[in-house]
Length: 194
Image 1 (tube, one colour):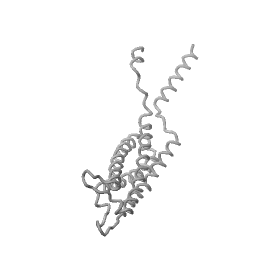
Image 2 (cartoon, rainbow, N blue to C red; image 1 turned 45 degrees about the vertical axis):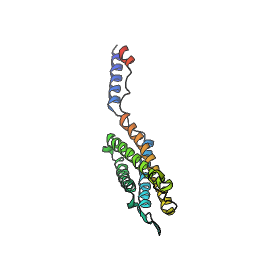
Image 3 (cartoon, rainbow, N blue to C red; image 1 turned 45 degrees about the horizontal axis):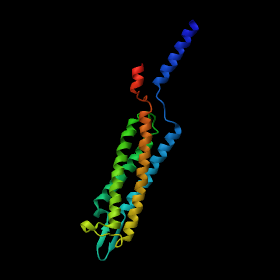
C-alpha cells in the first residue's frame, strides 16, 4: 500500500514540475527565426538603396526622383524600421532573459507584418500606375519616358515583397512561441461531461 502511495506521490510531483516548466521552442525553429530576421536586413537595405538612389531625367518631362512620390518615402521608412528591428531582435533573441518573453517578439512582429503589408500595397499601386497610368484621371503611364526609373523601382518592390513574406513567417513563428505554453481551449461538450 505504501508503495502505491509513494508511486502516486512521485507521479504527482513529476507532473506538477513538468507543468511549471514552459516548453522551449526547438533549436531548429530558433535558427530559422534568426536566419529570417538576418535576411530582412540586407533586403531592406537594398530596397532603401535602390529607391533612394533611383532618379532619371527626361528632357521633355523633367527629373523624376523618389522624393516626388510620397508612397516611396513611406516604403523607405518602413524598410529602415524593419531593418533596424530585425537586427535588434536577432541579437536579443539569443539573450537568455529575453527569450522567455515571447510577447516581446510577438507584438512587434505582428505590427511590422501589417505595416509591411500596407507598404507593399502602396508601392505596388505606384509601380502599377507608373507602368499603366490611369486614363480616367488623365494620368499617363510614365515608364516609356522613364524606363530606368521604373525597372529599378520594380526590383526594389520585389525585394520589399520578400521582406513582407519573411515578416509573415516571423509573425507565425512568434505566435507559435507566444501561444504554445497555453493549453488549447475546451469545447462545451467536454465541460458539460465533466
